[in-house]
Length: 266
Image (cartoon, rainbow, N blue to C red; front, side):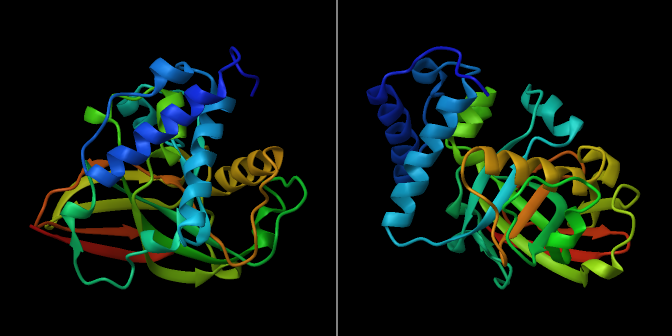
């Protein structure tokens, strides 16, 4: 994770401001790679951190993290080749809302995935063998991703800077971690108004959602931001993401875990 080239602080501030202004105005912006480079991962996370810190200062509370770009199908959709991570805030959780206003987001897409509720802090590097020891609940979930960048015209640095294209999330049925099946072998089917629009298996998420949790925990540690007990972790898409249609209802079924559902208003 070495920077490709030094980037002036004012360019980092400019990139963060461009993304924040796009969200406030409800109008997507041009990519920020013209300011920070296309592949400079460390600098992109510095941009992300600027806006995360601003959100916390404004009163929002961090409740977890999300892993993005774990599925080969999603990587192919966006033209990137490695995972990234972002921050989940309290206002992103729409699990209890019967309907979500489509207009809350700019250009949303939806994907079904496994979420984890952490049972304790992860303050040392972990492996896929001991990762389950840090998890209390395994949850069927939707991530409603969004991009502040017009037309989803993103490089890896663009999406990292944009809080890993975070939007909202929905938590559905859950089971205790001790009752979880082999997560590499689970299957997922997602429908839009009853018609199948996406499917996949647990192995499509870095080989297993447990591997995704390991990647996130260890990467977060390397940036000095360990995962904490009680946090929600969205482990990454199990199949291709789908554009959100106003007025549609989305449902996903994950074998051995359960179902999750969300509806959007016109």
